[in-house]
Length: 456
Image (cartoon, rainbow, N blue to C red; front, side):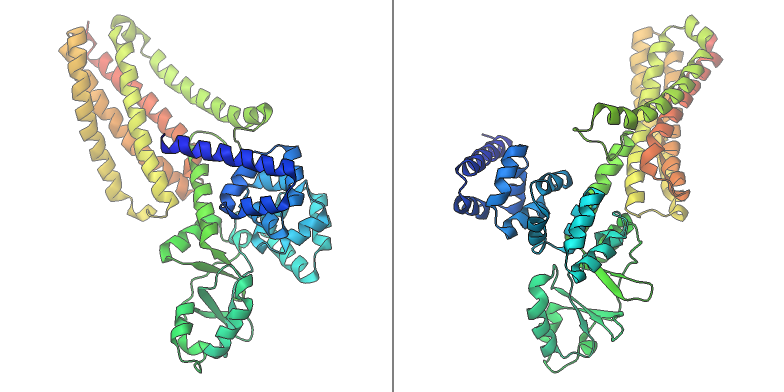
């Protein structure tokens, strides 16, 4: 039995076990089952339950188990769980959850229920939640959590460790300690290791690192993830305009952003909206996909018009109609290769506009070499198929020309889109494919028209 099959069998057994426990309404058995599972695996199993089963599950869970289930579930599943709970039970579970997870969940609530739940919260919690809800979901403020440790610079190491023992269980990150002044301005940070190794009577200001990497709450989540990756941070502080610490962004949130941005880029390169999934309704899928298909249709007309311009040439040498699709297809593939690399580089901020000349020239050289190699193979095949050396030579030249076009367009289109502050993943494929199709047909059929007397 392979690993994938074994995993499917395990998931099936877990689901059967969970359904059996729900049927018996045994909270002790459910707690034992919960403890035997990784919280993520338990959430994955619970997601397979239908509405009625889920409604019977939530009353059997302890408050901390319910909180864990909601933290580890996907957004849609959280809302499904919340529908089975009254506001009182929901607030009790919230006491075991991090504020950023609560905000993510409340952000998906209907406005009416969101207001009801927030109004029932304690004043301090309500103030924090309302503050976090003000920031866009895809910004640093939307990602940050307020569960961090910030200590005054005048505290001694001994007092600082006592404070960490007191508030540490309520925070997400205790490895990184942030140091603030009397105005709550962020002035430094230190590792927990620094505190443990320092003399107890030293002040935090004496052992802290004063070079702090931070972001504003309005910073885009993609830029935030890049900063965490670049500086290898465990936690990234979010500060106000006056440098007061507002919260921190943790590595697990950054990983979620990286996965989200990757999925978004892949979908957009295919002309699919990031909001669409397999469960999206027919009407919504049509709304999201049809506009891009219509744009593709318009660009297809350009390629069709190019072919139409050479109708007489094609009519005289029918073999051209079979070969030209090879030339345009190879150009499209080469353009996609270059474009994919550039989109990735630009998304990771590894390529600046001023640094493009050398890699751009490399793509042109790559187009010549790859075009010559693939063109030579194609030319030989064409010669044996049609017995015309000139047709093979035209194919070779057209292949080189179109792969150079593919390299140029595959490089320039994402770079230019990025320069004008457009997402290079959204429209790159349309422009690159159009260029390789139109120019590929034009180069091949244009050469055929020039050397037509040698082809007849």
